[in-house]
Each structure stands twice: as C-alpha cells, then as structure tokens.
Image (tube, rainbow, N blue to C red; front, side, top):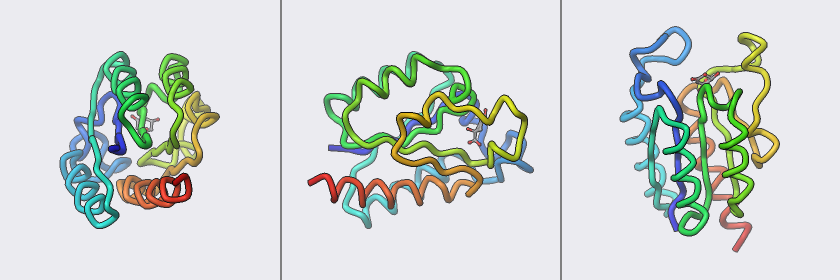
Length: 146
Ligand code: DQA
C-alpha cells in the first residue's frame, strides 16, 4: 500500500512564493526527492497537491481503503479545516504533519493546527527536508505496525 503525501493550497507555488520563508525548491523538486528516498526505503508514494479542500479530503478517503499512511502539509487549511481533521479521523493508519516553515515563530493564527491532535508527529521549520524526515519516520512506523 502506498504512502500518501498530500499538499494543500498555494504549495504549487513553492519556490516562487515567499522564498525567504519557504525556500527556492519547487514542489516538483520535493516530489522527486521523496520518490528517490521512498525507493531507498522500499515504500511506494502518491504525491499530490491541490488548492481545493475537497480534493485533499477525497485523497484522504482514497488512503482509507488503499493507503498505508498519510504525510500531509495542509498549508493554510491546517489552521481552518475541521473537515480535513474529520477525514483523517476516518483513516486508520499513521498520520504525520509537515510544515516547511516554523509556524510557531510566525503569526499567532498559525500556531493552532486542527490536524496535530490526530498526527503521530509534527515537523515544522525544517524546510523541505521535513518531507524526507517524515518519510523516514513513516517507514519506521509502518515497520513497527507489521
Ligand atoms: C505551511 C504553513 C502555513 O501556515 C501556511 O499557510 C502554508 C504553508 C508551511 O509549510 O510552512 O501555506 O503549511
């Protein structure tokens, strides 16, 4: 079963959008590094991005039946979406939350996450490396679950 790596709104602009905060790497660069590491770890991944909450929810539902784990950067929806939390609550496997920036160093409205209460772990402020760290952790969690 694949690990779903899901990315929320505006992350399609990664590398172009506020590079002083999010860096110069693009989301396709991230997808490529994740694919390379996944191969080393013996994991299959499904890497997706959408600007639409419903699309992210549909992928979480897909993961319910055919996914091993979910790594999610819900972007701004982190701070607003009970619907994404509910979708993750309907999923049985491990969930890891990733933020490229250190949300706790930023505006107060970024300090609360609806998703964190459902996540096995949270990575914030490690740049795009956070995705790779989450993938390594996911490999450990999936191995332990066997
Ligand atoms: C983000 C942090 C969020 O607060 C923000 O809305 C994003 C990206 C991050 O990866 O640092 O879009 O999730």
